[in-house]
Image (cartoon, rainbow, N blue to C red; front, side, top):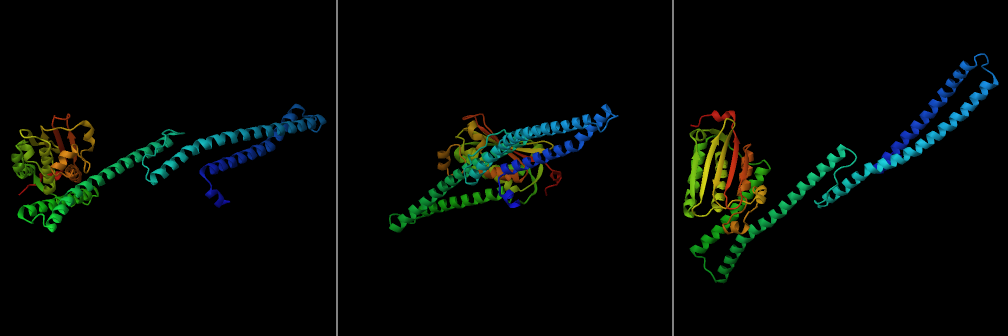
Length: 379
């Protein structure tokens, strides 16, 4: 019997449990009435006729009472039992139906259909919260799956371009159509460098998202960090005719944070390179720093192309591009901003982006917390 119940569904088990409760309640009510009812009636009859406790009138009245109460109680209990069965069936169905919907939706999600949803609501706050939580989870899984699909497609494109170039030139050299001169070797080396950078970038982002990013924090003066970032990107800015300015108060430059200087330098150079890709000759890019008692803010602001509002929530996703064709022409992998986000998070910081729209420039902001170790002196 135990195994049979364990193998049955939730609805039959709840229904069976409620039937058992109703049967126990019915039998209990009958026994209580059987024990207490006649005794109470007999005592009341003695109060009416105390001189004749054994008279035929008293016996006949008690016999009539027994017949009346047993019949009426039996009919009442049967009616209550039948009504309770009807209500129990209704409540069990109402309870089991959303659970069945949840089971169907969970099965679909387990089979890879992340569009499955359950109607929110139900018979109580707990069910409504459970269904809302499930739909939220399904939305996130659906978004993750779309991102994964797009990531694989973009990764395939990024690999296909340099591999096709390498294959074409090597085949031409093998057929004698082209020669392995210096120019060809430089081009081939550039394609292999591109593949190497892509592999390193993917490895870096994956390590950061899995919290395996190697960090070597040291007391670092912010002014030195800004100067290094400016030096590393100055030549590229001059080549493209874009003005690069560094603006920071003396207080902000003298702030010392315990950070990984190389990683944070990569954050600034990635942001500056991204700004360079989305500006035209004559535009201006400004790298600035602002300090408060609890945080340090680094900003990269440009007067370039700007970003439409629908793209802003996806800017820090891997391989996401606002202008796909232009970025691929410039050799961007679409992963630099994802690296920025990961490194900032590894420093317990946050990175934000703001733009008033196309043609109105963009501002990237990195907020880093200041700790008590900020007072450590840099030698």
